[in-house]
Image (tube, helix red, strand yellow):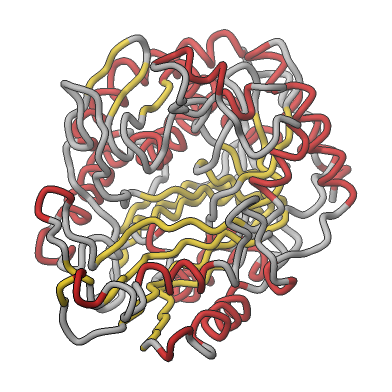
Length: 491
């Protein structure tokens, strides 16, 4: 199969390609994304009444209108709805230049968003788009609203130059931030239309910097769940109960100590860890050589010694070895408490021994760990033999297994390097990511022979899921052009 793939199409005028794509972004895509940011299209996990509120449908309708308006020859488009599931946008564009219609490039993205989060700087907010210095601030533009626009812009730019390209199909979902629990049903339903998938391009990942193309080599899995610890049926006077009734918070803390070491953050149970493959170790070393201290300096540190920009100078990450940090965030487990109930606001906290503490937990697990099995183990560890015979429960909302990319075919490696050198003057780079894209594992099962290109625009300080999230538009333009060049290399 590899012999049928040239490194890249020499007929592409790369200067024209980037110029036309950049103009497309400035003229149409940025204005569309500004409107998209305004939509509080939260994923179902964060908006149980999503169907009633209609924001996911509004985002889907906006994307559909824009895709239709591109008037790409032969394009067919459909919003697919299976019962009460979240909708999927499906597009199908025939191959050009006499190429085999059965050999397919599958492009993926999503339109659902994470919730608001606090801490946005003055004048900005999750649903308040602000475009300044080449960055579009607001929730969802980079994760992952831009993907459908970039995919169509890449295809259109190739067609404008008459460059032969493969059959392209697109699957844009609205459940990714909830673990893509609706997606398997859609993939089964759409399977007869997908043909022989040669390449999957998922535009929903990160970038180590904005200076070259970054291909994602692995993704961690994710277990989200709720731990509840109850010691009383109602709150009581802390002066009366203190020293008699154990604190529910302290019991929760003891239970979490079963999972990770509070002094180091190391997740202890072997069930949540795996052997790191030798090729991923080597890639981590190469990426560390490129990124250096930026691996940890990219985060908005608060320091005991300084405020603002100088805080990073005194920051103390878990380690300052960039290789170990890359492995920590991509191939090792990590536990975080991401929410809490049972804790009154500070301003209204009385001297009361609280009856319960409820914590929302997020456990990232390495790519090779089976997440459903790990979730069952996590529940057993948390609820067995509770301290002080407290009433303890743990229910997990999702358990998404991670993904380890298949070996890149020589044609794809060459195409990536060609695109990166042409657009940035540097070779492509390879890095695992700490986040989760359930779609990739699903596609890997359905199309084990397909090549997988996972890339994206979430570079330093873009802060997906957090406050002040932004899309780096100049980088997104080049990633769109790179997508076009890779599509053109498929034969």
